[in-house]
Length: 293
Image (cartoon, rainbow, N blue to C red):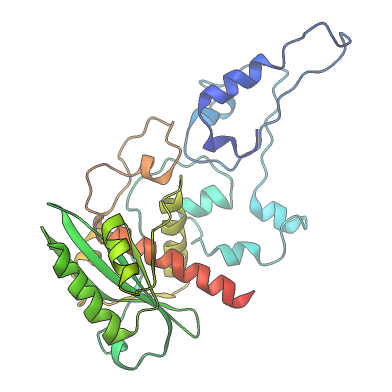
């Protein structure tokens, strides 16, 4: 089982059923299940194999632990790999991804060390690519977030629209206005009707990626940018995004069976501006990768 922490515990039960002796092999044949994974919280793997109070007490069980630091020292990971990850030493992501620890996720989701940029950056900053993320609400707020990247791969979040009970024509009007004013290269819209309207009007647009743990991947990427000093946020132009990022937190208690990022965060939190930020950041990160390849 590879990347077992992403699997439900039931998969392990099914696998165990397949390593029982069948009589078709010699009695000396060793039946074994090999499990590899990066830890993801104190989940079923922690309970069954690591926690001394709950794990199997079986002489046939082997538990092996390697950190990314050890992998780099041994030449398994290339030199500089850990630095490229960008996780702050001692942070929860560093402990999980570099030190291979089973982390109990608590506290704020986002690092709070972003660099402030003021609205002057929208006038003369030589942006290479600009993406608008759009989260369409009904009673809940609708939000538009403009994010850009410069020649040095610094990310700038410099424009925000945020309002509840927003009529579609108001959102479309704001999108058209900012498209002309800033020359937005791509729009990422989570509403099918608005997506089709934009496409029919000739706007370069697409749906966001909402695969299993896309949200978690982008949160990790944004935190990595913050740790490297490459995430710039206009706190005056984007007050609602600042408010959401400053309070967005993990659950205070977890069951241990959380698999994805969204399983681990506390429910019913405002993320109306965070969502379009994630949409836009993913497009920018993909564009940067394609440019460098």
